[in-house]
Image 1 (cartoon, rainbow, N blue to C red):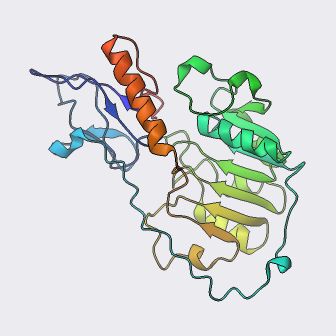
Image 2 (image 1 turned 30 degrees about the vertical axis):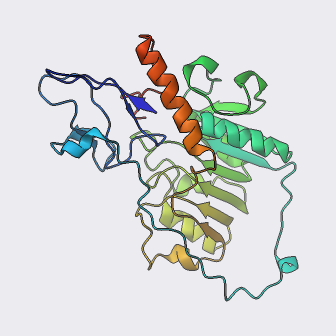
Length: 283
């Protein structure tokens, strides 16, 4: 993702590379020209909005994951693998809330296992291939997922054996998966959250995992990060916990470099850059 802005007298910063998929609280983006504030000093507030920041370090994005390395002690696990419950993925339905580039790649992989895919986005329409720098392995035309707009989320939830949440945290998505939405999932559904803390109601989710309405969860993000040692999620047997690392992959930095080179080339040729921050949308 890239952001552009202009400064006052002297050399202007034309673009800054942000390594995440959307501004997070504390992250820095380059602002647009505004006579009442220095566009080089904009930082995201806890609510995700951009604010002024006089710290010169605001010139560089703070994209580091703040959660500590995962450490999970499995010494008490005595059950043999053959005793573990298993479910058939073929024929199951996965609902992907946030059907952008990441959501579409999850969809491609789910289809390999014979799963039915429901995708939820703001518009409910297929994206235009040329809109983004896409490192995925499938074109929009090859996508066979059934698409829905956000106002049809309840319909998707009722059909989802697996729910994957991968939307950015904005005013629109904050708290969008609460107790009411979780109760629409089929009994024994699974929830995977690789989006941002604040989107899924963690208390409501934990309650439903404990009483069996939700069979299991995989959580990469939380309201509080790093996840406190006292968190109930650490001892929940039906929860897989990771420290905000779902976006990392062996080729992540190589793909990021490809995008940087692409945008530098476009800037040199006075062409529009790709993956530019949409300030109105919040990501």
